Amino acid sequence: MPKHFILLVFSTISCFPLWAQTTSSSPYSTAGIGEEGTLPEAQYGGMGTISGICFDSTLINTYNPSGYSTLSFGQPLFSVGVSSKFSTYSSNAGSFQGKTTGISNITMAIPMGKYFGIGLGLKPFTRKGYDLSQRSYAYDDSTTFNYKGYGSTNLLFVGLAYSIIKNDKSYLSIGFNLGYLFGSVTNQRSSVFDANSPGGGVDMTTYRLKSLHYSFGASYQRFLDIDKRKQLFLSAVYTPQISINAYRDYSLFYATDVNNQLSYTDTVSYIDNNKGKIVFPSKQTIGAGYTFSPDTKLSDRMKYQLGVFAEVDLMQWKSYAENFDNHASSAVFTNTFVSKIGLQYIPTVDVTKKAKGIKYFTKIKYRIGGQYGLLPNTVNGRQLKTTSATIGFGFPFLSQKSNSSLNISFQYGSNATGNAADLKERFFSFNFGIIIAPSSYEKWFKKYKLD
Image (cartoon, rainbow, N blue to C red; front, side, top):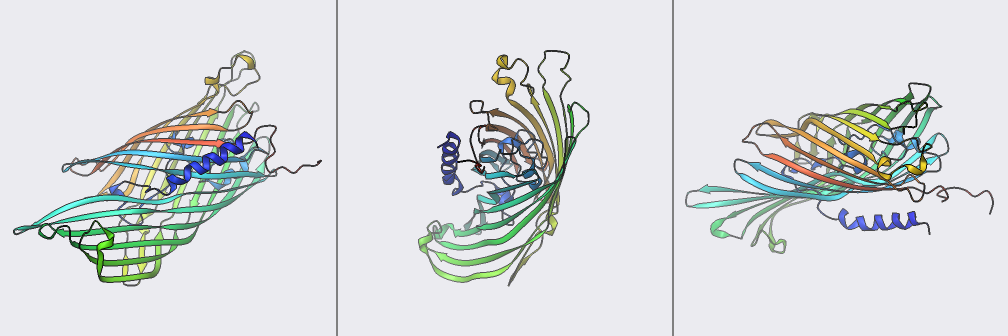
């Protein structure tokens, strides 16, 4: 069995325990069905988490499905990623720690002939996780309220891309992803009179999602000179507003111990399988990039490549709504935009010169970037702003002459309203990903002509 297949199987199996864990620890996930979006993928996380631009045939871009047809012929890619985020939340009332660890993606992309490509995979869609307490005093007694949230939803998808134009100068591709949303998230609230502790009331609301999801993408690349040293990239991704099929379960109990579900025996109210719709907002992403390499025809210098990329995400969160029998809620969010910028530097892209003298560090892809924008959440009526800086590296596997690589990235930033009295988050994330591709002599998805 080829070494790459062994590594592929091992990487996939080792990630499944992480998928079962709570995928969020954030007070900002209290509203709706949780925080939207996947965890950062390592290969793009170093460049401000840019995700819509298809600029490298050795990377899988599942966010922009038009990228499936950009892969090199006979070079399918398999990718597994894991991300960890460590947060410190603070306000005038104090501070506490939060941690998020989970799989960012399990994906595969396969070129199909010259003009087509397909992709498939599994990744997080939303995540919920918080544990907050509040005390209220009345006369000679006090009440402790505890709020907990947990669960996640995931997206299983398959996509197709087609190259409308594909020649030596230009490349234009379109694609779509069709996915299936599934999973559940729960909000739980308990109240306890201190004189009656640990007995009290508990109510739980669970949303179970089962619905289709789809998105569309386009990408354009063009060489700006005869020597192919300068290249322009343009991209666009559109995810329409969707009405998610969902079920809402609500229960209200009296418990002798609010911390022990086995004691939830006195049911005050119970509503099961309340079918309805969750209106999830549309999203648009536009991006552009430019890469440059020097002219080394008249010198023995190695040809490097420098690329700069930028994109903007727009999301209409005000359209979010929940519509169920005996329960309806309008938007609790605000429309958002997030701007991102990233740079990638490759010291050596022309390996024909001085091949024996090339050092490994000159083949590493060095990435740096940042982002700034507005998040959908508000604190005391003020919208959260996000700011972060990123750095990352792409380490190629040289032993097998393939497009396999190990990617890592780091992100440091904050989410805050700008008001010192409001809850503020400072975070650091570490993202790890491995991309596996066949070597030059391995046969993946190739039909033998002779046996």
